[in-house]
Length: 386
Image 1: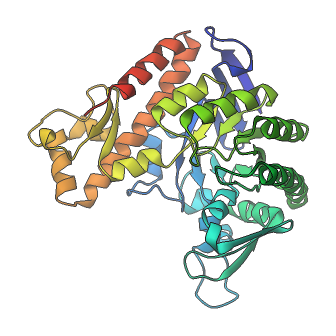
Image 2: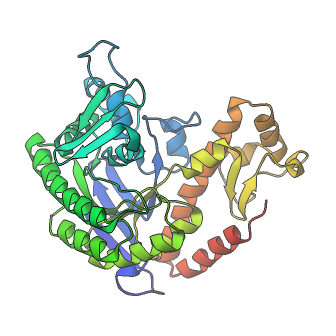
Image 3: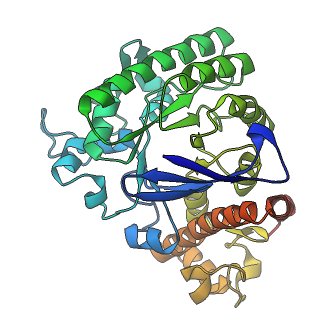
């Protein structure tokens, strides 16, 4: 499924930047790749599948938890769940009219975020819906069935994402349970007899010995890819990089490596240099909706007064729809006037920036110039004051 084409000539070992291709039922994903987060089968900010295609998106990531809750067929008890509705309508690809690969998360991180509404047991997690308070149970088997109903190309194993800081004894027992849950996910996906690919998730908080042991156990299970979860949840960037460097030597070199929920442009180049292939994060679209735009010169805060009369584009080096057609002055006006168009144009720009950055990263690895590109990004964002 995964073909490693080249590693960065400027580094060596398991922590090298990697250029690859991952074959899925709906096409080849060129890695390293950033997956655009379409939580409820849509990008927040008013983008649809045609926009995603135009900005160069290769993979859309949809949310198992949210799509299980809605769309529902009605408000009555016993009505079809959201994933059952999506299945009846032909699956996620048809539902959102997106024909390229889709990855669905397992729901584990959303359960983590509902810490006041949940109870975790060996069989799974009992929690209350954040929408209407109704009681819900989700375990490994339920997560696999939901993702099967959604019809994604890549399913994520159900795991527990622990908070940081976390007591070491709890982190250890949680990581051990995550391995047991993974084995149940594998068995359920085999029973469902789908063509979905399955990624396992490494856990263990910021404890190196737990992370290593957990990764060894997961790597012994033949999967289509392996992820590092439970980071970007409050620890410093330096701690995150330390854990990535600790774990990647134990991740199978012939399978894609996914760092979940990360991150900033700096995080991306730093993690790529440590051997990571897949990324996702809500940051580019969230920042865009609040007027923080990402450029080749670092961050730009479009609401600032200094942009009020500027006829410059957001980024002269950007080829997105927004930069080709609109000025900074117009974008600032839209935000100040609370026009919905402001968010749409800003999200288009930021997601284009991320997808274009990943394309440049792939090109730089191919041409032996990754280190220069990494320094360019680090300099731009460390010196950004726009």
